[in-house]
Length: 247
Image (cartoon, rainbow, N blue to C red; front, top):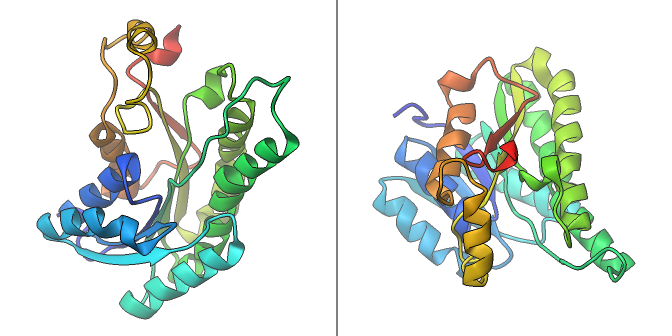
């Protein structure tokens, strides 16, 4: 139970990677607060966390609104007395070729995927600095490293997390706070299950390990950075893509 009694806040915890991270942290001893756009979306995660022997606090709000971050962190502190870790996972997509992408679609993805991570990182900074410890993991994407047609907004937002993490790591390291990015590749979730079979086969063919990843693969990497083994790692981007980005 390497995370015994640690208090974590996970955004985008209702499904897929976020849900897997919440359950994995709980299974290793952490108390987990999960945030989604609506409370009812967290029912399955709450059930899975409790089945793993964990404690779950459901929270709701729009991560693009800085008040959501402030309120969520305040709720965790009120419930458990502090916050030891943040996993900023929530995000959206508004795909489209650059020539057709609207300014609104570009701005909304940056406001949510990059702005949301900033709001939550800022909200946990003061209590973590006061405690002189903390772990922050931002969930990025391998496409930030290699690009992807039709995803200029998503790639730009995820790439922004790299600079955000590195700058924050420099600012917060003296207070015992680590800030890192986990960048998944092609992961089997409900978001990717709708891809045409030909597209799935083409993507899988590019992966050195010959298979898509699972949410559990990402959760394990997050737990490494959040746990004792990751204590001396900060400002880094950990790519979890089975070798997809190797070319």
